[in-house]
Length: 257
Image (cartoon, rainbow, N blue to C red; front, side, top):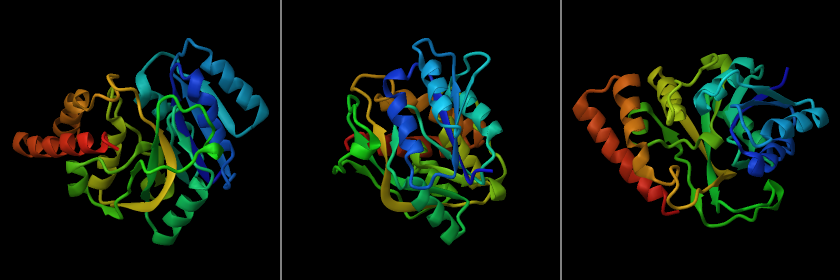
């Protein structure tokens, strides 16, 4: 059984998928499986995944029975996970080569069931590999310790850096909402009593989307954050409003990096 299960949702990601997959397969810690769920892509992403699977048995692709969004695609992969640790990477981002090795050691040394790391940002048109990436000054820095209260005000965890201990927390699935399902998962874990620990070293690279896109428009996330606060966390309107104000301010601040 692999020590680490890496969860990757895919939808029409052929242009960036290869670099993302290779960034996992070239990890210095090789005892892993890459669980990829294709959400009914139409651009050849699944064909590319099948070729990776033929070359490396650690790549385990599946096709979602119907299009359901990133949350459902991640959950289908989580349900197949066999590793002690479950980590996440989107198909347009990358891990740096020592990410898995350093984060697992960090989690084991600190007995932390939920961990995350600092990460770099790269331009949307970056076409290199993780092994070619030159560190830059665009760093989103991980906080050393995050509890539930702090997490309500700001999502401190970059999904591409998150990892949780399945033996301690069990298999935890994401709510199947269109956006912010990762944030809702971290909150649910922390609400149940597990604080998160951050590793200061940047160990992943996030692809910053072009200005004007849905992903770069931070205000577009407001209704999804509100759904998390009210429906998933059951916060009162005043408390949800305070949390939302802090989340929007922090998100806009991070977008300047």
